[in-house]
Image 1 (tube, helix red, strand yellow):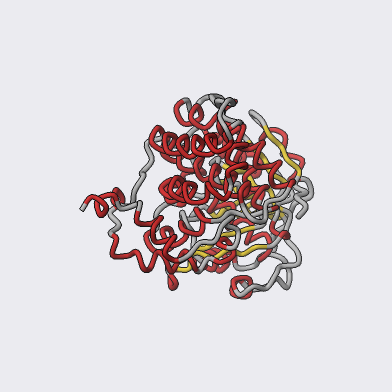
Image 2 (cartoon, rainbow, N blue to C red):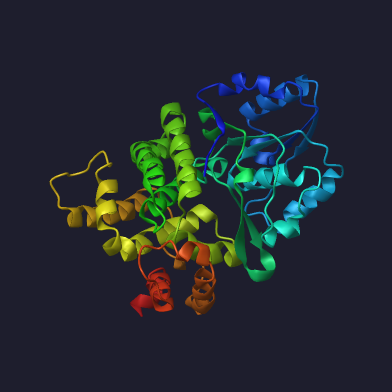
Length: 383
């Protein structure tokens, strides 16, 4: 899959995007109210208002949006005469912006048709500007929507949704609370390590994953602890972008499959769900990916290269465990008030995500999935 987006990156890079507005008559800006208040966001909106285009702002995109949220946006737009869609926000905002870029063209498929598997053929010109460093949505052909009636999420996937332009602007991420920076950073880590170890991994996705992992290992904790460190913030934006590019060429697997029902039924933030699942899932797949785990371990700034591959693979899992603790993210479902009585639903929901389960580098049974979920209930194990 070719990613042909033009990338703009760096401090004050917003100053370089004015040319994108030339000749645009109607611009749709998709964001949320919190992001819209940021000074850098206000700078972007000032540029848009100063231009000759008519600007429509949609700023009520919720976390974990559903198909009903997108349908409500479409209804509020009325006429869809749009020639530039800008997504400014986290992964949820960017996913909605990508969907709108294909739903606002003449004779576009309906949202229902996209959910049923029909593929879009064209998009409106699009610019995606991430304000979190985790989802990599700006580099993926995916848009994820919650389906409340089924208590799960689905992915609408098409390379047509890949944006024309991406802007990676570190000052837009400095206002993220530490827990958001931490959980979105772990989301990026999951994308990178899962794509690197997936059955469909290939030299292109491996290259993206290794570059992204090196940047993430060097900068994640600094970006959380020192939010004004623009170099670390930019490294994390790039790590997130590379994670998205790895998804576009390979795909995630066990962590993401098992996090879907946690988000769909219990509305646990995606990065938090991934943080809880990262260690037990990687511990399970480690024996099937020893060499690749060792390669990833060697990218750690503190890596001990005298270890054997087997030892490095164990050390990487230990690093993941310590990292989640240092970032003060939840490590169990007990902490989130979810009881073990919901195990059957969780197992069924995870196994239903077959597009991801088929990427796991080992055979995974329902019992295996249940065993991983069980590790997330320490109180139950203590009985």
